[in-house]
Amino acid sequence: MNNEQIVVKMALDAWNSHLSRTEKLFSELSDLQLQQEISPGKNSGIYLLGHLVAVHDAMLPLLGLGEKLYPSLYNIYVENPANAGLEEPLTEYLRKYWKEVHARLASAFEGMSTENWFGPHKSVSEEDFKLQPHRNKLNLVINRTNHLAYHLGQLVLLKK
Amino acid sequence: MNNEQIVVKMALDAWNSHLSRTEKLFSELSDLQLQQEISPGKNSGIYLLGHLVAVHDAMLPLLGLGEKLYPSLYNIYVENPANAGLEEPLTEYLRKYWKEVHARLASAFEGMSTENWFGPHKSVSEEDFKLQPHRNKLNLVINRTNHLAYHLGQLVLLKK
Image (cartoon, rainbow over all chains, first blue to last red; front, side, top):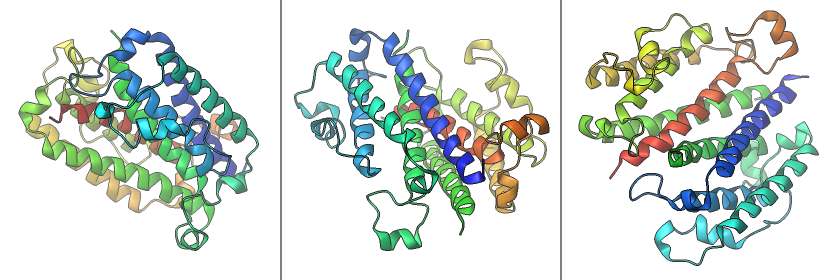
């Protein structure tokens, strides 16, 4: 493996290990536990579940891997706060969406070449990318892993 | 820049941006707020401050950049839980240690070559590194950034 291939492995290993930890946590938390707030007056576990599904679903178009599977979630769980009073899916559906979005991402990642990972993601123009070549697809995964770790640190607080 | 240099920049940018966010948060939280638990029955802000300083201080020897500045912190904030009853430094000292450890890391990072970043960190043997070349210094920074993001997600809960 050359260093570029090694780095792709490093970034995907970190992404997958945080996904596994989060998935294990969600499987251990009941729907009732997910309704609790992570700390008094803060987000509920359900809101964070919806937030993570929506943000990860949006990675599909950003990485050039197709359309979002559940575009309506973005408005509910990213563009609006928890207290906006929007109608939310049942928790059992959110759990199902979580699995589907990550299965789609995993299968798309398998087929991606190293060269593709170092190419621009879809929210950067070709011109900007020439000057800012760090705005590549791999960087998006690194940033989303940090975002996931941030919320995983909050979700573990729901465990008794 | 070649792709190796680009990746070093990506990893250091993510590290620095999470450090800045955390430092800004600590500067906004009073000592009294840091004494609060992030959620009822969970770690206090002070414990997490000490934990992050101790873990980041330990990066110095792991990256081959010298000895820890405050080795006694590791026992208090990493090897033991918050309720172990160990004597802790005053919060004002922990705030000072935070600044010193990160100043030392930042100055050492400036002088590191791309080749050095892709070399083995100090907890992997030369033999293991031949088979597992992803266990390099850059990977340590990527993992510590995720660890920092995890606890940053908890520390923001102290804000009212």
